[in-house]
Length: 159
Image 1 (cartoon, rainbow, N blue to C red):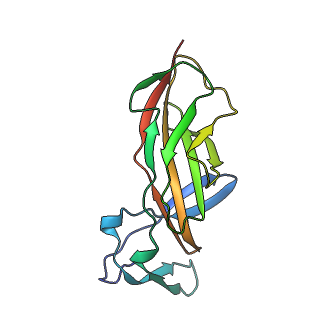
Image 2 (cartoon, one colour; image 1 turned 60 degrees about the horizontal axis):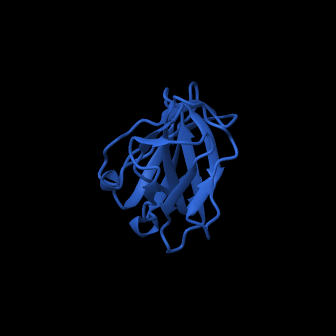
């Protein structure tokens, strides 16, 4: 992947992204250069494929603001309620992600866009530390999907 200034980045391979193998790259907003990017796929024993991808900074959504559980909070139920504030402008999708102490994703669920809370149906294990954050999507399809990730917070389920 090459940005408009010629800086090159390799894509990251994810062998099991919800049942699919994908190559992708997440960039921090400060690292994204508006303009036309080039994606080149190297073909073994063949001709490389290059595609131009327009990137518009105005399409990047604001981040969700996390409210509770707060960082390091001890939660007294295995089915915690998550509270957050979603951006108001143009949001098409929001997703809650919960990871276990090894940072493996165990919950990845769409959040209703008209709500600022979400309760888990899954029961989390007492005494364990978990991490949570919220993805927001405003527009785009592959090869460019405009999304942001909130800060990540940890919490623990009380014994």
